Length: 179
Picture (spheres, rainbow, N blue to C red):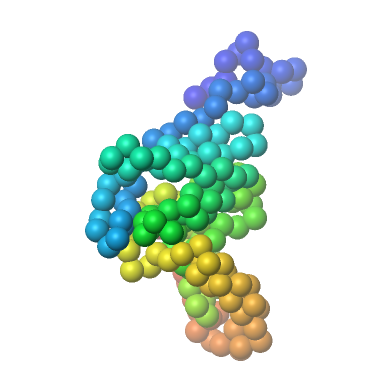
């Protein structure tokens, strides 16, 4: 959609300083004490704050707020985990984390970090996209995996491992996965 001609600055740039807040409702799966249920997530973004409101089928709400959607999701998960609730979305997977560039743009997508393999554009998945219940974990488990990944991604073994190089060059062919 083209910007309103009345909102153009000199030079043809759009004046987005008074842009309306972004609100989106997304269906979300959750496990409540091991039982799958359908919930709704509402994402609000205004200025530099992201707010994620998660609503259960019984109209109970939890909220998370952060500098990006991934951080807001982690905050909401921190409130839900003691209640025995696990969200079945890619942002709750143990092996996902957004890049710095994704975080600067709201972290709507995260990378799936596979052990001993380099991360490519084909590993991008939407934060609130559906994930297998066997792959999700707690915020602490996700932090532990991310710390392990950061410590091991540049090991010397990766440089001499021919499978690592084959994966790097062949997995980046094609389009990103849909989620």
